[in-house]
Image (cartoon, rainbow, N blue to C red; front, side):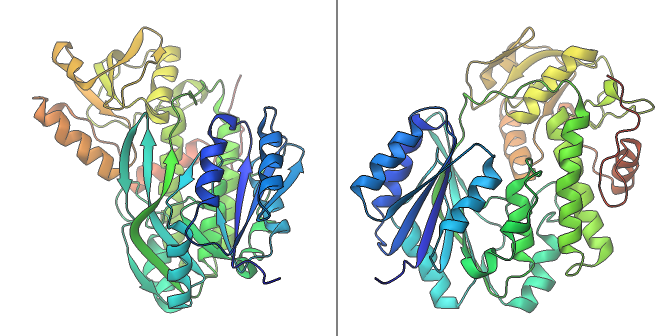
Amino acid sequence: MTPPIVSVIVPIYGVENYLHKCVDSILEQSFENFELILVDDGSPDNCPTICDDYARRDKRVRVVHKSNGGLLSARKAGLDASIGQYISFVDGDDWIDHFFLDTMVGYALANNADFVITGHFREFDGKIETIRPINPGIYDRKEIEQQILPKAIYSGAFCEHGVSTYVWNKLFRRDLLTQILPHVPNEIVMGEDAAITYSYLAISHNLVISKIPLYYYRQRHDSIVKSIEHFDKEFYRLGLLMSYLKTELSEVLDEDNLNEQLAYYLYSQILVRTGGLVNQDFENVNYNPFLGIRKGAKVAVYSSGSFGQHLLNNNLKNNFFDIVGWVDIDYHQLQIGKNIVEPISSLANLKFEAIIIATINPKVWKNITEELLLFGISEQKISKLKTELTEIKLLLSQLNFDTSYRYNPINIHH
C-alpha cells in the first residue's frame, strides 16, 4: 500500500462538543492521500469512544490512546505513530477548509518546501476574523537566516511575531520535525507551539508563506481565564520556554538580536499573564506598563481576553486602578468583581480619565483605537504600553530572570 503523503495529528482532550466538526472537516478534504491520527490524551469525556467510532468507519483513521500528559506529549505520540512525508496538526476544537491539505501540499511540492505557513480564521461566538501572515513569499535557507529568523519572534512592532507561534496553520516535513519535537522538554507547558515552530524554522531550508486563510481557529468563551494566585509558577514556565528558545536559536541568530527578540516576547507574555500588574507579589518592583495612567486613576478597560481578564483579576488584589468600565466588541457575559463586560457603546455613559486597550498586538491596538475615535473618545485618553528595551530589561532583572531567561524565584513571598 502506498504510504500517505500527509499525517494529520489531532491531540484530543475534553473537546467532545467540537470533535465531530473537527474530524469531519479532515475526512472530507479534497486531498485524499493522508492518514488521520487521533491522539486521545486521557480525555475524561466521550472523546475516546468518538475516536474509536471514526477508526471503525474509515481506514484512514488511527487512534492512539494514552494517559494524560498534556498537549506536547500528545503531539509527540502522534508523531511517533505517523508515517506520512509531511505532518499537519489540527486542534480538536478547530476545523479546516475543504482545500486545506490540497493547498498546503501543493505549496510544498511546487517549491520543494519543508515548511509551509498559511493564514487562518479566528472564530468567536459566530464572528469570523481573518488573520494573514505579514511576510508572504518563498524563502530559501539564506533568506530564512537573513530576513525571517531575525524578525520571527519580534517583528519590530510590539509585540507582533514575524512568524506566528501556532503549529496548526503550518505544514512540516516529518524527517525534519523528528529532529525537533522529541527534544522539546515536556515541562514546557506554556508556549509549546512557539518552542516547536521557532526551533523548526531554525533548521528549515525552504519556506513558503501564503496569505490564504485555510484554518479555522475556534476561540471559546467557555475557557475563562483563572486568576493567578502567585506569579512564580507562571514566570518559571515562561522562563523554561525562553531559555529553550535561546539555546535552540543561538547558533542561527546574532546574540543581540536574539536577546532583543526574547526580551520583547517575554515581556509581552508577562503583561498578558499579569494584566501588567505584578507589583503585589514582588519586593522593590513598582512597575506600571501603561503610559500616562497614574495609580488610582478612573480607568475603562477594553478587551475581555486573557490580558483584560488578568488585569481585572489582579486589580482586585491591589486596587491599583479604579476600573469604572469593561467593554469589548467581542461582547459576552463575564463578570470580575463589580465589573461586567459591556458592549463598546456603553463607553458613552462612563466617566474615565483613560482607557486601556488590553492587547499586545499592534494591529489589534490600531483597529480598536480607530473604533474608539469613532465613538468620540479622545486620543489622549487612549493608553499605550511602555516598550523601551532598557526599561524592559531592567524589569526582567528585577523579576529575577537571568541572562539566559531562566526564572530564579528568590524574592517571592506567598
